Image (cartoon, rainbow, N blue to C red; front, side, top):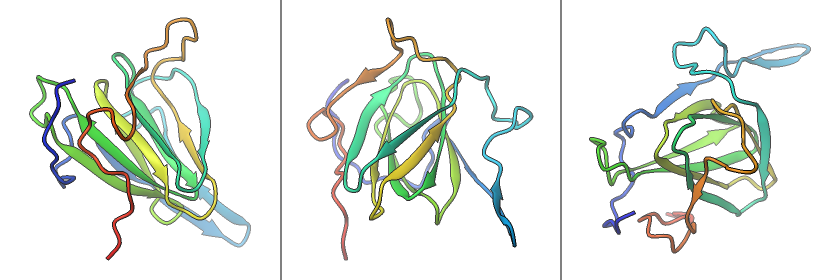
Length: 163
């Protein structure tokens, strides 16, 4: 990764990234929310489904994959999701996206290979993130490439922006 100059998050989606609002259907019994269907045009295959959690104020970042797409949503709490495009051949190289998703803004985010991503819990309680990557996790040879969330060379500030 080359050091990049800080640019504030852009409203232009990074090349290959998709954000799909999810519809919550409430009734007197509770709620239903479809997250992903195999007949969705953005469904790219099934590797596994897993749940990860993050405690308030904690940052889980940065990493990318060379092979898999991540398709994730936050089903409890709220997370600030940040994406950084370090792909040299991408028309959005050097740009950052930022989203606040979760209970109050249910969305499915599709992250293509090569895009750094991570999130920070911004709710007052533990957030639950469900991920449906296109490839299973291989413990002996993981498709996961990490860098430090604060000093790894990605020009992004995880602190809260008050004002």
